[in-house]
Length: 188
Image 1 (tube, one colour):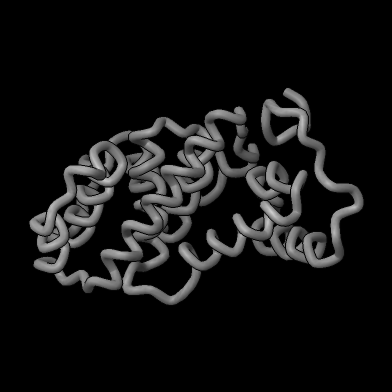
Image 2 (cartoon, one colour; image 1 turned 135 degrees about the vertical axis):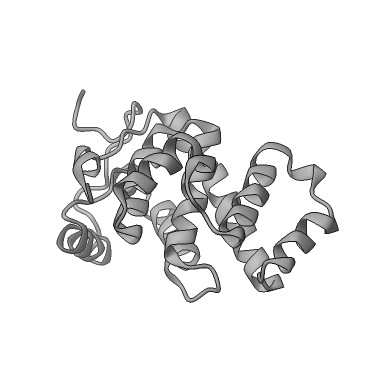
């Protein structure tokens, strides 16, 4: 395989704008790598900035949904969609946030094998429905989330994270995006 993050011939802007280079340097320092998804978007800095702004808001901003739960949503969606990139990268994040390599593997293969609490189970059942049959969601589905303690804002956040990963899974799969090899050995 080449050093390209995707199967598409979309070279990164060179040189990168100063702010983008600084962001990539922070990623390298904190993560030990620049995620290939960022490298893939770097052919168009405006698209990269839009992607990173939305990703950072959904995955890192304050929310009633924990960072681990957001990563669990990413993996649940990606498992249904069979998105190799996201299963590898966000499976590593589940391992990291949970401190449990086995949970990361269960989430990637079949989240129903994991010993999840009632809240997480309800959340992932809702996420499955968003991913496979979003038009069938009714008030009863939202109420099931409220019944286990989610607020309406939490429901919005769950839906937003699930929607984001349904979109990114499709882009990653269509472009042949490959995960950084470092993800495979992280948090094991």
